[in-house]
Length: 171
Image (cartoon, rainbow, N blue to C red; front, side):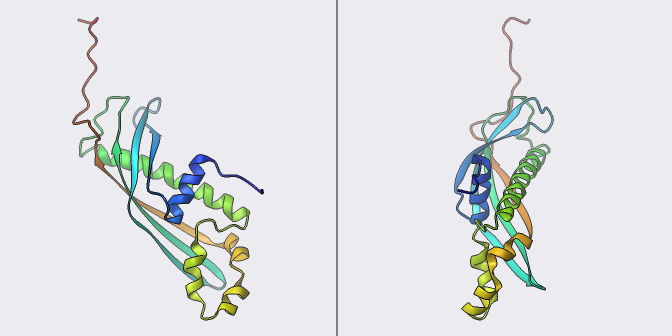
């Protein structure tokens, strides 16, 4: 064994591979970072991978499309509203994108294409001999990879609207 992936890295890898179906995530509340917001995330469409090889260097673009539900909001900020929903979507997208790039860098250092990008790249070669001569696993460490995430909050779970907490002792 050379190295291991953490649970978060494994989920990022699965999304980049196209094998992710559903999972629960927590992110820091964008307006009150001392709190968290749990989300139920699902894949909404298959990942899209484009590979170009220019001057021997692979350029890879990955598009991951996700949707999710808000499970709870500790801060009681009304993220369900149309004005604040994009704030939560952006916070999740940035956190996930950071985790994906961290996982990609880890795998590149190990000369390991755990994401199945080679399955797309091999179509760029006319013969098996050309593909084998290219030595994808060695070239993968030089790959320029960009990731785009399209994430939308579809439902707010069972919450219709955040309500203030009533304290029975305060009157």
